[in-house]
Each structure stands twice: as structure tokens, then as C-alpha cells.
Image: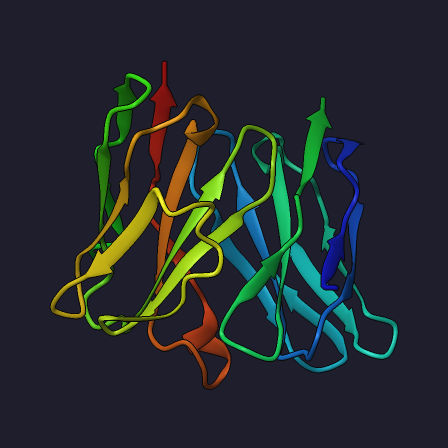
Length: 109
Length: 118
């Protein structure tokens, strides 16, 4: 079957760094997405990885290892507004995105 | 610019009634997706449209659920004889195309319709 695993909840301190992991098992692989979803709002696109390695975009970076079926989202210089759920999604062999249940990130002052 | 819009934003209905949810995708986006999200849960895929065709309806929970898309644009999701377990946020997303290079894969989400069945 197809499966996306990520931690349910994480807590971090304002100004610190946090890494949210995602492991996947899918039939085919055509890219991995990270989305941010604030409570009561729609998900918004953060990053896309299709090749191995690190993609950096400001305070956020995303890493992919296709051989390990593994990705992480790295958030630096955490701000209170980063409190949200972070969704990992994989595009398999067809058009569909397979979604993880999301990681709720709580930022404490 | 105009994003994906959905209406209504909130819908409270009695068990057994029919409801219709509407999605206006971004102009020019050929692919349209419906998802359901229960409180604290991930996204549950319901149905996907490429143009006006729905190649995959496998995510629809039961035959009480149906969806259509007209003119390659607006889509409606209809739930007949609603049940309490249908209560959730229904999200619509669109993308430029369903396959291709990286950017066309990005799905743009609407604000969702919160459905409460009493």
C-alpha cells in the first residue's frame, strides 16, 4: 500500500531550528511537496523536491533522499507565526498527491 | 490575483438533507481536486477532474457523493441524504495541469467549506 508518515506534533522555541521528518512508501515517485496549513485555513505551498538534495528558500529548506524514501522540512529562526501544521505529500505514479496526516508545530516564546 | 474560491464558507444542515458545494478554480487551471479534511486529520482525496472529465472517482466515500464540472471551470460537489459522519471541511484545489514539470503540479487551495450535519 501507499503510506506517508510524519510526527503528529512537535514543539520548538521561538528563534530556534526545527526539523520535521517525512517518510514515504508509494507506487512510483514524481516529487514530494511540503504545505503549510494554519488552523482553520487552507494549505499553502512551501516547497517541491524531485531530485535528491537540499532546496533552500529563505528560512525554510527541504531535503529529499529518494533511495531512503525520506524527506525533511527545516525551519530556521522560528517565529510565532510558524505555528501551523506542516503537510507532506508525495506525487506517485499518477496525478494524485498522497498526503500525510500533517505535523502540528507549536512554537513557544 | 484571483485564487480558488469556494462557497458557502460554512454550511449547517440537518441529517438527511442534500447539500451542494461549489468551487471556482483559478482561471486556466485544467485540473481540479476535491478533498475532505476532518478535524486534526490529513487530507482525504475525493475526486479529480481533468477538464470536465473525472478519470478517478475512487475516493468518493459512497454513492451519496457526486461531483461535476462544467465548462472546464466551476465544479460542484453534491452530498445526498447527509449523515453526521459527513461533517468535515471540504477543500477544493486546482492546478495548471495534472502532470508535467514541477510548477504545474502545485495545487492551489480554496478556503474550504465547513460542513456540519446535525
